[in-house]
Length: 439
Image 1: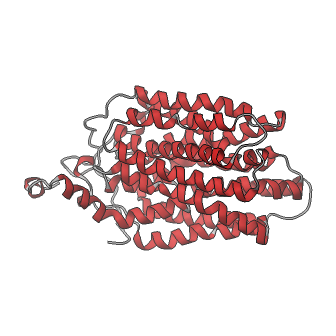
Image 2 (image 1 turned 90 degrees about the vertical axis):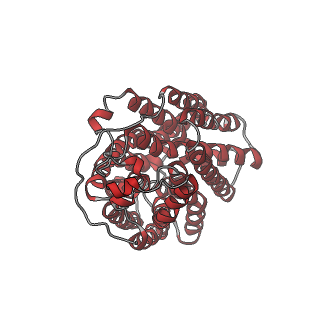
Image 3 (image 1 turned 60 degrees about the horizontal axis):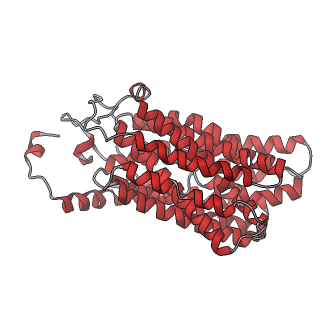
C-alpha cells in the first residue's frame, strides 16, 4: 500500500462488502463453474451409476467397480501440494485452465475402454483413471480457492461458500445427466457427454477468471510493502493446529466418501430404483448447497468452532436412518441425503477458510494442498472400505456404524484450534507474472 492510500478515508462496512463483491463477482462466477465442472465433484458424482452396467457387462465386484475412484483420489491427493505450489508461483489462471482442458480430454477418453473380457480390459480402464488423477487436480478448489481468498476477506466465508457451491450444483445436475446418458447411449458414451462440463467451464474461465492485481487485494492479507503475508509450509507443519485440521478432515472424509459414492447402491438395497436414487443424490446436492452458504455466512460472523462442531455432527443422523432394515421411505432417505450433503458442504468450506485464517495467503496453495491431502486420500479410501464391508457382509451397516462416530470426532477436533492469529509474517517479494483475463 502507498502512503496516499493509507491516508485515504476508511470505507464504511457496507462499502467494504459491496466493494469486494462488485470487484470480484466475475471471478467468483467463473470459479464456481470451474469447481462445478472440475475433477473434484464430477468423478465422484458418476462412479456410483457405473456399478450396475459394469457389473452386467464384465461381472466386476463392487470393490473392483469403485476402485478407480480410489486410484484417482490417491494420485490427485498426492499431487495437490504440487499443483497448489504451481498456483502460488505461476498464478491460478494458467494452472486451473490447463488442468480443466486436460481433465476434459482424459475423462472423455474413458469412453474408449475396450469391450471384451479378461484382465486387459480392467487394466486399461484403471489406466485411464490414472491419467485423470495425474492431470485433473489443478481444476479443483486447490487452485480456485486461492484466487477467491485473494479477492475477499471481510466476506471470505460467504465467497468461499458460493465458490464451493459448484460441488453441490454438480451433485444436483451431473447424476441426472449421467443416468440419462447411460440409459440412452450406454456407460461409455456417458463419459464423453459428461466431459462437456469442463469444456464449458474452460470457455467461461478463459474470459472471466483472473487473480487480483496487488492494489486490488484486501489490505488485511498484505503487509505494509504490499506483499502477501502468511507462514511457510515448513512453519505450518510445526504448528499443532495444522494436525488438528488434518485429522478432522481425515475423519470426516473417511466417513462421508464411501456413503456418498455407494449411496445409489445403499438406496437400491432399501428398495429404491435408480431414478429415485438420482433424485436423492440431487437432494444431497441441495444439502451441500445449503451447507456451503449457511456455513460461509456463519464463519464470517462467529468463531469456526461454534460453527463447525454442530454442523459436522448432522450426518450422524443420516447414518442412523440408513442403518438396518430392508426398506426406507423416500422422505427418510431424502432427509439422510440432505443432512449428509449439508455436512459435506460445511467441511469443504472449512478447509479453504481455515487455511487462510490460520496460515495466511503467502503460501496458501502449498498449505491448502497438504490439508486437501487427507480429504482426497480418505475420500478415495472410504468407498473401498464401504465396498469391502458390503462384499463381506452383504450390507453397508458396519461402515455406517463406524461413520456415525467418525463425524462426531472430526467435528470435535476443531474445537481445540483456538483463536485466529492476529497477523502473519511478510513473505517478501512475489514472483512477477502477468495478470490476464477479464478486467
